Amino acid sequence: HKKNLISELSDKMAIKSIHLIQEMKKKGNIFTSNQIVDQKTAQLIVEAMGHKSIVENLNILEESIIQEHKIMNKNIIKTIRPPIVTVMGHVDHGKTSLLDYIRSTKIASHEAGGITQHIGAYYVQNKKGIITFLDTPGHAAFTSMRARGTQITDIVILVVAVDDGVKPQTIEAIQHAKLANVPIIVAINKIDKPDSNPEKIKKELVKYDILPEEWGGENIFVNVSSITGSGIDDLLDAILLQAEMLELFALPSGMANGVVIEARLDKNKGPIATILIREGKLNKGDNVLCGLHWGRIRVIKNSFGKEVKSVGPSIPVEILGLSGIPISGDVFYSIKNEKKAREIALFRKNKSREMKLKKTKIVDLKNVFQNL
Ligand code: GTP
Ligand code: MG
Image (cartoon, rainbow, N blue to C red; front, side):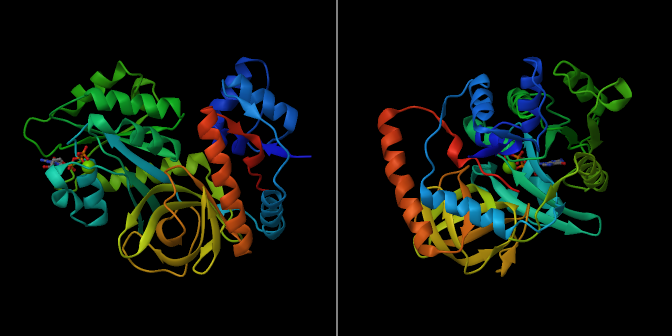
């Protein structure tokens, strides 16, 4: 009989497990994120969270993949993984410039109209540690990307330009982060500007329940300039401190699973997906199942554009070799048998067609993955 891990159940509903746990606590039920519940309880939770649940017999092939991961990863011990940090804030407040400074790149100046239009995924490694950053657009039109950004992240960096203050997408970003229960670090940017007054920003943010520790809140505030680099070391320290408190662990090896951040079609290379590994290690040559698609990984490229042989947890990479273009948020699994991957992908494709016809939003419990 299928059992479900609370953290995987919340993943499936695209909410943070902390949020699920808090909501269930309000209803008088205590759960922990690494608790395993039976099918019936899982169903009750899904419905309590306002979703519809369906329980079907597992497709025999899908079941075998879950078993395969379980068996192969059984003896692997979880280790510390790098934090995934999403940079958010109002348009032009300097999110991309901040990452450019941290990475020593010049992406911001090459963007069309100076506006970010997709989620960028990068990791940086320095003597303090590894941090993965997701850059999000601040333009009002890109709400769903910002929402997605907070759902796959551990920490949000809220960038507020000192000369512009709290603006609509600043507030929107706060709401996304709160909804996803992700801690917010505030980076007050552009403090190189004359007459900048960071204290004023702090006061503006009180209204949105973002408070520094010295005012009884729990948000870290750092004053930075993405032009001069002032304060950026402190920001990196703050991120690593926050990450330490979150105690982020993952399987460093074994069969991999992860999530698609973005995907596109390259005329010459075929489908290219930017993915983030959640557990295990993905290797060149691995067969994968990814949403409605399958494939054999032909190329893995890190965020420096360099080809690598394999990649582990929290590190974003681009992969080549999928049979089609997955959608953001799709989950992928490495699979030993290519034929099996293909059959499952086709099975899912048919099912997705059926679902589309029914037009119902359903949390499919049988896909809730269990990492044991
Ligand atoms: P979107 O992605 O479109 O939301 O914008 P963004 O938040 O990524 O802003 P971006 O990094 O593109 O910077 C916007 C403008 O602000 C650019 O002209 C930057 O040069 C400028 N800028 C960014 N950071 C600073 C800073 O610390 N000081 C000063 N003086 N200018 C900055
Ligand atoms: Mg940008």
